[in-house]
Image 1 (cartoon, rainbow, N blue to C red):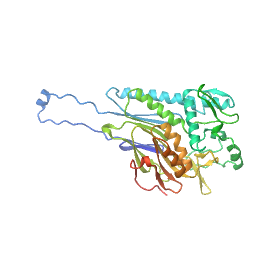
Image 2 (cartoon, one colour):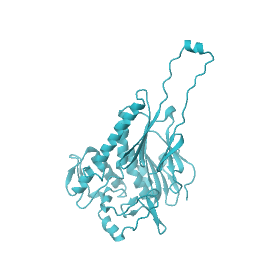
Image 3 (cartoon, rainbow, N blue to C red):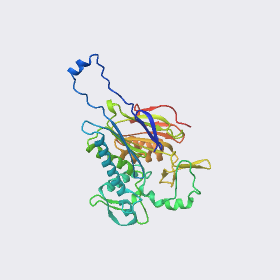
Image 4 (cartoon, rainbow, N blue to C red):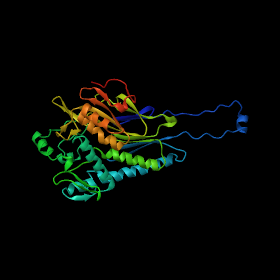
Length: 368
């Protein structure tokens, strides 16, 4: 969370996301002899690509689309393609939301202890979640939902009336274990153990962003960006071949300030940070990224920006890197093909994985 998308000049801020509009360009043709120009009119130049921006609220967040027209798709065509992409996001949300009684996830939780057939999308996300749990030794665990609403974070600096009882945290923590989930690839069935729950909030948005991007490609778009909360996918480039660029949020700086930039082309990006939903009590920061192994907020990092060849993969890895920290977390990122990370650890040191060295530009040290 907290990614600033840089597209040119003139900033428009939405929450922690800052969007910039490109500078307008006007092609001018000067002629010293109007009559001669009219007598010999050159072939008309193709129209410069027009940028189309659309915001839509879905999956509990504002999803932002930026796309450029093509020779085949004008502005109306681009907007139509984005409408179809939003429909795809709503379809994914209907299957994976923990807040909808008819979703696959809700049915798995209500029927815990039974084998439940789920849709192909839900099965794929659960399967990837178990992979993430395995490579991280449980640092990523979708059965964390079994702890319920013990931790409540409403925004930056908003402190609840009371913190969870340590004894209750310890008791419920025993329910968390991704290895207890059973899946059957031949029947596409999943079994959540009785008395436990799952939640896909830590990975479903990345998957949904990729599916929306697939829709835009099928509709004929080449150059676009889809961003949902802290997860995005950037395809192609801006006019003239200039890559998309992101500014990485300074975790202790003022809102919409950055300490680094990163260029993107045909890749996903996800960010996990302790600076959006948190509060400070007795000199300690409590935030919404909970370590499933302890039941308490993770302490190894301040922020992680995860680059990968898909938003699905970057979303699967960002919490892992954040929770495990620079040594263990970055080792997992480096061992994963087509993935890299920029991590600010608990001591404010910046770590850049090998695949991103030379691609990320560090502007200054993050705020202490």
